[in-house]
Amino acid sequence: MTDDRHQHFMDSNVRRPDDIPPIVPLTWLADKHAHHGDRLLNNLLPDDFPHDVDRGTAGDALTLLALGTALRRSVEQHRGVDIHQALTLGATWAEVALALDVDTERARTWLQAWADGQRSLYLLAESEGHQPMGLSASQHAAVVALTERGDGEALPPNASDPGEASA
Image 1 (cartoon, rainbow, N blue to C red):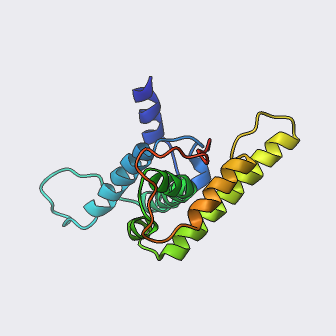
Image 2: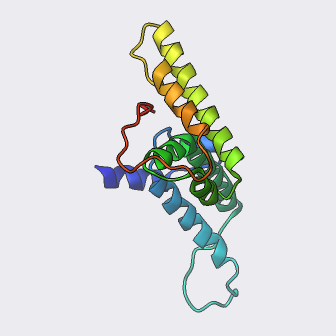
């Protein structure tokens, strides 16, 4: 079943990020990106290249642009929860910032924005009578407390994290 869905995605026409279904594994995006990138690279081969190759088209270039945008959005969407996990598993702010190639204040800003968004999601779901998802008030406070730790301060490994998120 998964192979059929993967092949269907690989065969699909993507010209803008919204052409991509909401839940597609990153590996599928990368596979499709590599396929169209390879076709475009074939354009660099000489016209008399001795082997049969598929040459890239404007459609391949547009697909690469759309897939690149979708990949970037997906990574950015998960960045906050990834930062949260790194910190609660014992990484320091300095290590997180290094992994993100930013300063520690930028990394803190990203975590704060994610936490605030998750808190808003929780409040919205709760106000509409739905099962809350996101961060409760106590979970949000625990995540915000992480932003106040020093750059070299780490939680002990396997520390209990009251800010465990359901994102």
